[in-house]
Structure formats: C-alpha cells, structure tokens
Image (cartoon, rainbow, N blue to C red; front, side, top):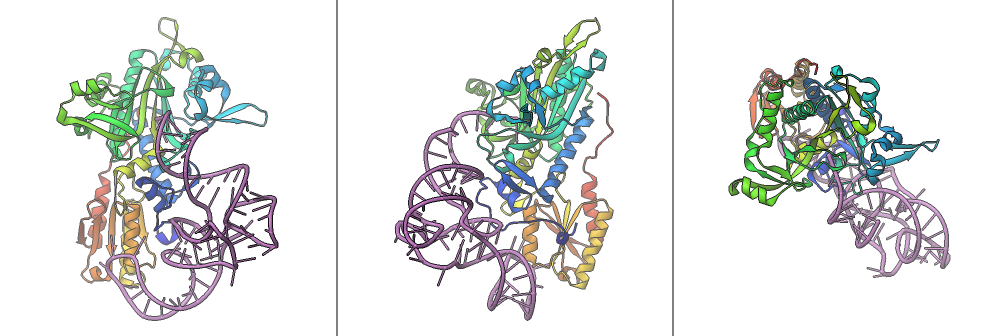
Length: 455
RNA sequence: CGGGGCGUAGCGCAGCCUGGUAGCGCGGCGGUUUUGGGAACCGCAGGUCGUAGGUUCGAAUCCUAUCGCCCCGACCA
C-alpha cells in the first residue's frame, strides 16, 4: 500500500478522552474513531489488525477441530426466558423492542441460541463430540465504558460452545480449549496466563481466565512468578489426545495463579515461596468454562446414548476478546514513540521510508523494494508522501510496523538501504536485494495454518 | 446509579468570573526556501461557541432545561 493512497489519519496530539496508552495510541495511529461511548468505528489500520487477530483465532480454532458458524447479534428474548437468563442478566443486556412490540436483545453471549441449534439438529450420541464457535460482535451495556476498545460496550469476540456426551468428554473439551488458547496467544506474541477465576453470569463449575500482565489491567492478579517461565512453544499437540491435553492443562495450571475473585491469601502464602509471590494487574483476554448441563437441561438439549437413554449433553463455553486483544497487545508492546506490533498481527509487515521523495534514485530504489517485497507475498506500507524525514519516521514509529527499510540518497550513493527493527531499534545497512531477502526470510518463519481436522 | 468535570475550527486549548466585531497552537490548502528524526517564512480557507428556551438594546459569556462526552466509585469479557 502506498501511503499517499491510504487512509491513515494520524494525530500529533492526544485526544483528551484517552486515558491509557493503548487507547491514546489507537486514536493517534488512526486505528479507531469513537462513535459513541464504548462504541468504535475501525479505520483501515485498526481493522487490519483486528482481522489479523481474527484470522489467527480462526486458524487455531479449526486446528483444534472446532467448527465456525455465525449467529445473529439480535436475538429473541424468548430463548433467554427459557434459560432464565432474561431476568437474571440485568441491565448489562441491551434490550430492544421491534415494531410488533416483541422483546429482542443484542447478544452479550450465545449459549441459548447455540443450544437451540443443537437441540433442533442433534439427537444421537454418535454426533458427539461437537464444538461450534463464532466470531461476532457482542454488546454489554457497561455502566461505564472506558479504556477504548479494552472495555467497550460493543466488542468483537470469539465465543465457542462444546457439546459432549459425558462429563469426562466435556472436561477434555475444556482442556483442549485451554491448550488451543495458549497456542493462539503465543502466536500473537503474547503471554496470557490461565488463572483460576469466577464464573460470573455464565455460571458453571470450572473456569479459567487468560490474563496478559499489564499495569493498566483492570484485574488484580496473584501468581507464582514461575508460571511466567512456562511456554507451549513448538511442541506437537494432538487435540484428540485426552491425556496429552490434560497434561498440558495441568502443567499450566498447577502453580498458583488467580484473580482477586478467587485469591486466597493463606493458600498463596502456603503454596508459593515468598520470593516468587507476585501481585500485579492483568488484562483478561479470554475465558473458558465448563458448566455441565446448566443450559442443556432446562432447554431440553438431549441426546440418546448407547443404552437408549435420553440424557442432557455436557457443555462448556469459551471466549476470546478479539477487539480487546488489539488494546491488550498494545498495552504489552509499545514504547514512548508508539506501538510495537508483534510480527504475527502487524497491520503491515514492513514499511518503506523514502527520505527524498522526487529524487530519481530514491524513488526508483523504493519502487524496486516495494515490488520485490510484494512479490514475496508481504504486506508493505510505502511512505511515498512528500514529507520530511522526521515526519515519516515519527509516523512509522507511531503505527509500529515491525520492520522499516529506510531509503535515501546518502545510502544509495554507497549502494545500501537501511533495515531497522522497530522493537530493538537496531539498524543494518545492506543492498536493496538483500533487504528483500532478509524481510521475506523473517516472515517465512511465521507459523502457517495447517490442515483442518475433524473433532 | 452516586459524586465530580467538560462541550468554542479536524485535533489540543484560551476567551466565560466582570455580556459589546470569536482567538491561539497543531493540522489542512497555495507559494518560496528547505530536506537523514515531527523545518522556516508569506498568504488562504475553516466555527449556527452541543441543543432548546429565557433574561437583556445586545449572550460563547448570565438563568433554566436537555443531550453528549470524560473522570472517581459500585459493576465488568
């Protein structure tokens, strides 16, 4: 993309309403525009990041055998009356009436609707296990939205629902989700720690939240510092292997890590050596639940088991806050000059800065780089504006592309361009051809989607 | 919902107390000189002062209502 043809309304000054760094940077980088309290339009740069995160979540969900669907944002209140949550949910749920005076709601979550789909079409244990998920806009009418997309009223979320014959199978689904979530966050360049949490209005027996440590997090967290050493890494996961998924789950949840909702000072002191006790803040970027037959029973989601008995299915649900992750990643990865995107979610993989637009040699070298990098399948932002160097550098730093190639007459006279890492600031001079090879090599190592499997 | 604050040009703000021709910086447009980390100068454009009503000869300014937004608290993926 040539910057002169892009829509990137960057701001030099910080809008007054933004309090935390991710909100300020998203506004300044022209990623979002507030439409009303807690509701945002996503401008090209922000939308690109949102889509990249979404793509990773889709890939990892399908790798784990989960099936994508799409359910409506507006739902009839009737289903919610069946489960009892229409009254239980409270003012957080946005209620709407249509022209016939029927009650609708803007979905905050979709257990009822997905259970309705299930009960209409599944009646045999042979169709299990089944996990359906969607990535869709949700709405919670927060009393006080704040922190930009980190706590909006409208938010983009992956929500998934597993249906299993037995409690044991459903617990495997729980473990499978925990593992796939770990992989999802790691791919985004994030460390998200599973912590024992409270189940809130979803209900249920077992639940973990995934938290990204950040000073601006809204949850207070308590953990054993050793949990931050654990990585999933490149290990090979078979999502159908119950024992393996359970082992990974246990590995990641054995050490003390809890939010303030479930924190127990006495247990903390007993289980964690004093030098490893940490009290910090975290951003919740996902949560998994096992809730058994809480919805299947009242809503009649039954299957016939091998013995001919009609039994309610065991269920769980799982969420990843896609739009919130955009903010969370920025909170976890920025400096005083702007955002520093992890390579996997960067809106563009590399930027080209032409220091002397209109100079024949500089223009030609930039065109060569731009065409060459695009030919390697990379998404490039070429700053071809007639701007001074300082302004171009400031824009690139602000929007946080992981790599920058700087092209100017001075370097070209010696046959070199400069490749700079946004994260480390380290710069290296090389020929344009070498720069193309280097950047293409960096991104060739990125994990690719693998073939889909059936559950 | 309780407490507090703010709505004046695209963004950041002053002006309001003490009523009298609506300002500054950034940004935008044109031009000249510039050009390796947000350049200088000249010129230009851009605002029904959130909205409605009231007081007044006259309202951005005073009064009332209302809408919106932000902060603290309770709540929260």
